[in-house]
Image: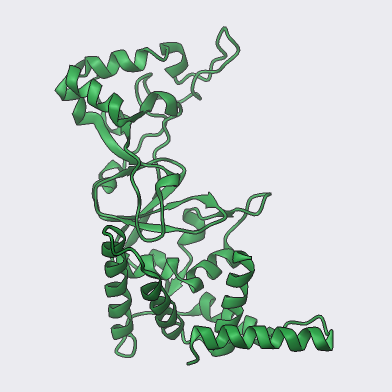
Length: 314
């Protein structure tokens, strides 16, 4: 297989020839694109069959009340140490980087309806929430005297988050976290029991290192760019429905060592990003090559991906 540098050189050379001939047609023929589409659409099995589960992040209905910084968290816990029981570290979409997350010190007051919390057991938290106005926190969908609205109508109590969050236990597991809507695709691995806001999705289950590497690879990005729905401004909607159909080759004797190396490289990248050794580009380049090999791509099919990647960067 040609190296990435060789393929990029081939792209630039062919583009020059194309300009000279003024054909208006890419040198990469329809057959390469068609082959790439067919392979990624039929190979192996979708992520839904890989022992993973995907969930939305937490929707509070009023972030200014339920999302707090570290200083506020410390103050509430100082006034009543019991408050710490329902204050959890939180990742927002801006914290998500490629392969890892950079926590910004935010927390969520986790009064999830599924927990059936008695707010009287947490008087300091209760008073803090009341400082935002009980009418605003009520989940009735009412229009208030000042013209603003309370949270939308649900069956939940005034101090609870808007969504049930029955899957709250998933946040304590190792998981992948990513931004649901955006122009840049980044998938982070989290092992710190972080909770995540509704601007993100999370994935728990098996083979998370390998899946993280594949989704962060150039091929993984290409699959989403081609298939995921988009907003009116062109941002990718990387929701549950977009991620679940992505297919990975089934593990066999031929590719088990490739999977093993991909997983090991992902672990190394995550470790390096957490230390001063944060130049991970050579490792990411190696993952790209292994993913091309895993999916059995031809040099021409790889060139299709690299062309799209170059266009995005430009």
